[in-house]
Length: 487
Image (cartoon, rainbow, N blue to C red):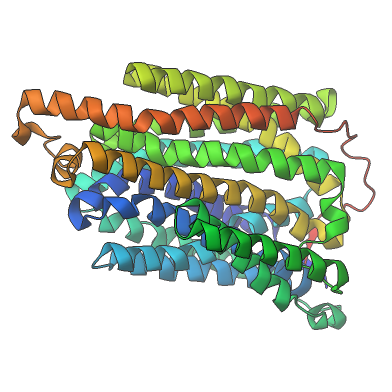
């Protein structure tokens, strides 16, 4: 089916959706130490983000396929509504268990927001205009990145961490309103709505990913690792035979998509874990406030849109291969520098410079990668192709956060009593403990968290190596652009 698009309103809705996703990452990372200080449950720190990302990861390809089969508008609106219900439940959560359950619902909705927003943008613009628009969307991401940690820290101190989740509601409601007005669903192809969904594939993929994350986090690995492998093998078997596979195997075998997914998965783990665990390090070791801790992460999401805009301009002159290789190499160097700074007690300003460089590398690579992937497939598969790149990036993040969360909880429980860690993360930053104890325990936390950043540096080097395999592709050669119309 084809849908007439009011471009101005549609762009506004996508900008709001982008703002929602960008602000979520920095606000939540800033607020989580305060959540732990209030609700307790350090051992569940990683799960609040890991299960959110798991839910988002599992549902991204499902939302993407639904967007191809059922239309972009109803799917993205459903995703935003689900995200807002989950956000409200997070704000009302009485315990860490309830918060984690609400984060799962929020993650399910998030899986249908950003991927479909980017798919709609790909539908509306041919590659050259799409590259230019990336700069605009990147600018919104940068504004949200700057505002997010500052606003999050202010909300936590002035009100409470619960209002961080209420923050999503007005922006999501406005995005729904604009999206409803902008996209006029007019069914011209009734057959499109009758194509079968791959329910078996959904169940098998969910089982494989959930088992993988649980095993990686230390829960019955000898049982769940084989379960994950078996479910994955069955998933591939089903996908090869289904009329409308969730992740088409022939699509996954294309070199541009295969390399984009593999390298993006590894780098996604580095990016997500850095955003989650650096604020914890800043508050527990450096004694930073929630606002200051968020400001350490924020430069990554400032460098990203600036480099993304530049990447969009350079894409047709240099090609995606050069930009992906250069961007992921910068990410690897930044992760190595971050590891050094954390291990040797670098200053907050040095960490900020490092995160800015990290974001610059991500911006250079990601714009070129997404546009090249979208241009390599026909219109009817653009939704699932776009979703696949985000699926592998988020699954990398979910696994990395889950594994590293289990690691840091295990190490810190052996070094730092929970009551002490709660005090270090509290509003007085451990002053009630005495100067000598504060210095000693901060050193213990620093030593306990150093292995996390060793792992992230190694992962970044691996991701950069995979990025070197990205093929040389002429962007804009595809004739199936269907610009200006979305389904």
